[in-house]
Every structure is written in structure tokens, then in C-alpha cells.
Image (cartoon, rainbow, N blue to C red; front, side, top):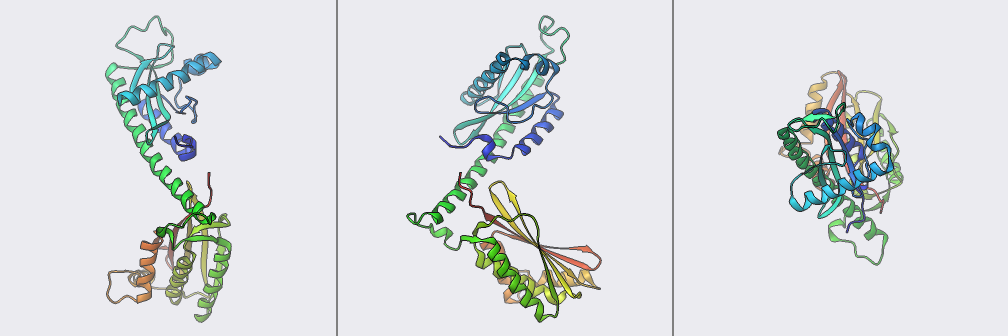
Length: 339
């Protein structure tokens, strides 16, 4: 058994957006639950009947939760979407969300009356959704496919979490051997690294008679796991190559850190004031960092190799206005949260 809940592994805002779009497109109600049958997203497109009648009592809510769980388990055993009338006589569809072989949640939709059946006695003046039997079947198949895609995304996130834990624990515990694959990485203080990088950049800029204006954007966690030596080498190398192209007295450099699920991405943006012939100068810089060219400087080739192969990062170039070239560096780093 895994120690994670659905909401621990995937961004609920992402699920909410997907669910809202699905409900709007299909024209039926939808919600995502955890393994206990409780909703973890806000219901989308719920009918007035379910909002105002069925779900206003504890007994009705308990019946719904039980229905969700039963339907999901039946869907798992049959490997197909579960379609059945709920206790209120409405068709609902349940598709399981899985983490490996474990049931971790459900994609639920429905509140449908089948127009191919006689529903006069059930909801004579209802505000629920009406679909044909074929439409219900097609929606069920689509729901089942979407649940499998969500499960695949969860699997990838789970692998990332476990990788994060293994790396963090291996460095925290002296009793555990550090895996060879992670030998180039270590826990480091990001503020100490930033200070060291700033000092190196200032020395580089002094050689070109320019001033480095360095800004730290967003909140950067105190400690990360990665390769600080390679990061510093790459950043100072990039600055040394582009500094001669700056025609202003100041070279603007912004550092940032953004979080994606259970990892962080360090970012650096250089704004190079190029004066005239911006496009030509941009092409020269891009050529300098192109690996496949035989005549590129060795340092630039090495920097590009380290970014791509060792740091799994990205280096991009652009023009923000007629006289300013932008160089963006992003490098993923693991944080040290251990659940």
C-alpha cells in the first residue's frame, strides 16, 4: 500500500480545471473523489435536484459516497466504466483513478435521465440532464479513458516524489550509501550559492567596464538538492560570453525560483542592451552556444553540454524590444521535503 492520498500527488487546481472543462463539454455533472468517496474537487454542473435535495442530508451523501466506491471497485474488476442508476434513479458513471495497482480516487459524472426510458414517475419536473442510452455509453467510455490519463500522470508524479525522498534521505542519513548516479549532486544552501555567483558576475562585468544589476525574484527555499558547482560554472560562463554584447553601462540579471509539484526550477534572465543590429547580435550569440558548429568556442560548447546533459536544463534566447536581447536559463532542482 502507498502512503499517499490523491490530493498529495497531483495539483487539485489542475484536476478542477480538467473537470470543469469536461462538464462544460459533455453537458453533465462531474466531480472527482478520493478513495473514501469524498469529493476533493468542487462539483461541476451539478443539477438543482442533487444540490438542493439529494445532497442536503447526511443519509443521501453517505449513499452517494458508497455508490462511488462500489462503482469504482466494480470498474476495476471489469476493466470498463461503471454505469448504474443511483439511489435517486439517476444514471451515474464512475471510473477509477489508480496509483499503480491501488485505488486512490474516482472520476464521477452523471445525474442523467435516459430519454429512451420512461422517467415520468421519477422526476416529472426535474432539472437533471437528459441523454440517450448511446450517449451515456459514449460518455462512459470517454470518462474511463480520461481516468486512465489522470492515473498515468499520478504515476509519474509518484516516481518524482520517491526519487526526491531517496535523494534527500541518502544525504541526510550517514548510514545510507549515496547512490552512484547522484554522486555529482549534494544538498546546498541556495543563498550561499547565489552570493557566490553574484561575486563572480561582478568580477566578470568589471572586466568589461559595466555594472551588474542583480535582482532576486520570488521566494527561494534555503536548501535544494543539485549540483551547485555546475550551476555556478554555467551561469558565470553565460555571463562572460554575453557581457561583451552589452552596450549599456548596466547588465540586468534576474534570478528566480518557481515550484512545480515536488521540485523547484532555478531561473536566470539576462537582459542585454545591444543597441543597433539586435537581430544580428542575437544570431551571433546563438551561434556561439550551438554545439554542432565546429568553430564555436570550447567553453560555450561545454556550457551547453552541461546545461542539457548534466543539469537537464534549458537555455533560450529572444528579443524583448528593438534593442534588448534576453537570455533565459532554467535548471530543475529537487527540494528537500520528505513526507
